[in-house]
Amino acid sequence: MVQYPMTAKGAETLRSELENLKSVKRPEIVAAIAEAREHGDLKENAEYHAAREQQGFCEGRIQDIEAKLSNAQIIDVSKLTNTGKVIFGTTVTIVNVDTDEEVTYRIVGDDEADIKKNLISVSSPIARGLIGKMVDDEIAIVTPGGTMEYEIINVQHIA
Image 1 (cartoon, rainbow, N blue to C red):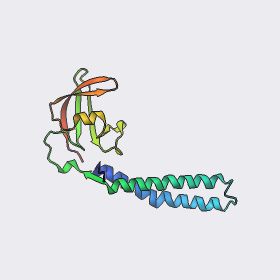
Image 2 (tube, helix red, strand yellow):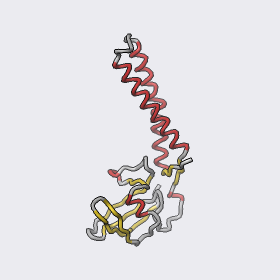
Image 3 (cartoon, rainbow, N blue to C red):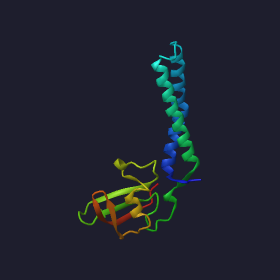
Image 4 (cartoon, rainbow, N blue to C red):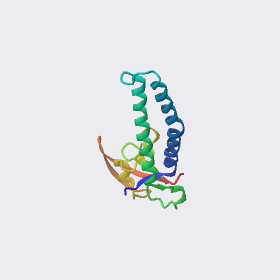
């Protein structure tokens, strides 16, 4: 059985989406199917087919979320001692050695990753380069634009 690393916040977000799909979206789709059935011939009923397609997507997403939550390894770094070492769930500030540009990332599970919010997947090249390193370590990360040199300047355990 594959375990999915996930932050406590990520697990809560998935639970919330699951609850919404089951209690709001699913009943809406069932009502749309029932209404479309009343329009008669199902072979040429676009509303019926669209509602059935929506139902398939909804049920697939419900199964996907339930599987991920049942196999989730929820890690709450705020309950762990901060040793200055980069681990899953930590918030890491790094500085580009060449440009002095600072950036802060939080290392999260694959489903939680959102680069616009500086949430990077634990399986991303940057996260893989950071995991296991310590504050003041210098690392080289291979990116599509070439190898970049970074120094880790801060590691935080934020919930």
